[in-house]
Image (tube, rainbow, N blue to C red; front, side, top):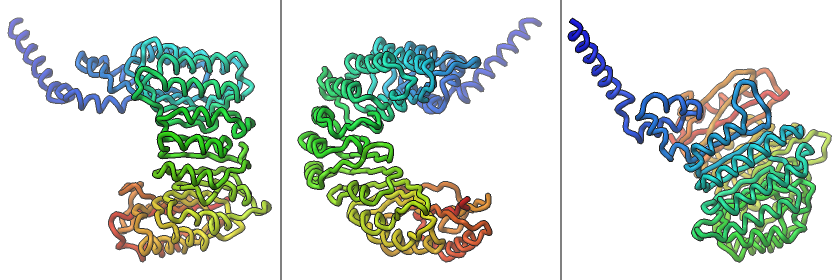
Length: 481
């Protein structure tokens, strides 16, 4: 009797095993790895306890080549300290880590800054110890010019980063240090170490991508210093460079010429940093002639001065992408008309991506915008947030159909008084359709609350029901308060 029961139990166990093998248990390792990539760290730890097979798959190096940390320097009763999490990850899985991204919540108090320094320095030191094969390093938003960072904490953090570059950066190809806000001396010391790290055993590995937006404190006149151009000149493998506009000078543009050609040069200009320095158009022309495939991307934030914009937007710049945010009141004597009518048309043969966020409540920019779109021959992406007439949407569509065939992705979204209408060009409702890599997006600010512009937009769309199937257009009507 007992033997029969035992045999029956064994049969049930075998049936259960067969069922498990026919489901998740029978998946190949490559499929499990793909699924596990979508799990958070704590979910991965739980999955690794399911069975020996999953535990072994979870140790696959491909699952641990990228990691993101967000450090705030704050303690919590309900979770492990940031220092313990970082050290545990580096000790157990740092040997696989190739891409590290660290985002910091800038500290307000010295105690939080002290915890941040301990966590980041400990993490980097442990990665050196385990010989992590880092290829990409991103450390952003440190904001070392805050009073919470004492002089000793700044020096310790910079020293640890320099040590990493000397000892653990032999395979590093991408570095992002945006928002670090160093003083001039410490910033140049760190960049010098970065440049010297190029002379290493693995001579075929060079830093090809470097992002330094907000790397120096906003009050530092970096464009007057000759050390930065010299450092960048010696980084021979650099192909993608991102800087604050306040670092730009004729000397820097010359230093970028006699080396491997740049492919992408991104500049960020903000009202809070110096941007009134004079850069000659000849320097831009020389750089453009030495880097034939150069793409310049310019992002401008709150610079609402026509003369300064004219200094920025020199016709010799091979501008491919322009993005601008400008919130201004009717009392401020500034108009976006010269920008749209005179400055941006200079790039009619090169401009591909255009983003404008304008609070033009006291002036009409419809005709200027339509004329700009019609003359820009290479335009692929257009994003506009502005006060516009609803009929402008129809005219933009007409320009796309008759002149700008590269705008192969168009979206229309109408939103007013919490009513959402998502309409595709073939008449079917659809959310966030992605057909190609070309974007045409318009957002319209409205002072009307009666839905009149929404009805007008519906009437305009009703006459465009048989557009090419690859077209996806989006417009939104916002009620402005």
